[in-house]
Image 1 (cartoon, one colour):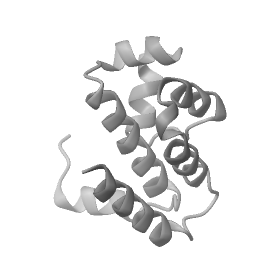
Image 2: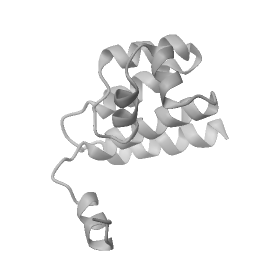
Image 3: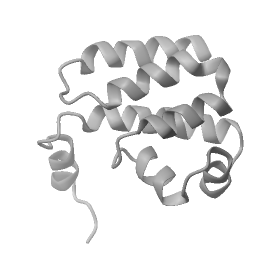
Image 4: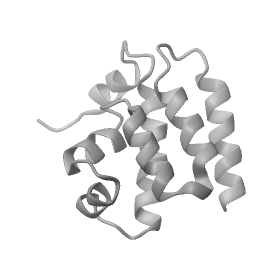
Length: 113
């Protein structure tokens, strides 16, 4: 079954208020991986986890755990502050800080460009 505009909208209005935070972390992690020109399998081997975990974290299905966070910091120590902050926000139990988080992401992206 293909996604219709209605189902895409339903995805955005999910009852999971933390989904956006997890998706933003996942997008950041995907950017780290693609900037390093690594496949998901290569990236998983480098940080010591499974390919499906990488895929699920990048898509926002999984909340990044402390182990994945620490492994990312080990691989990218120069981005420790961003990794730690994005992971912490992705683990928030509610989406109440989503606006502040999005401002941080925009500022980080502008600085990286």
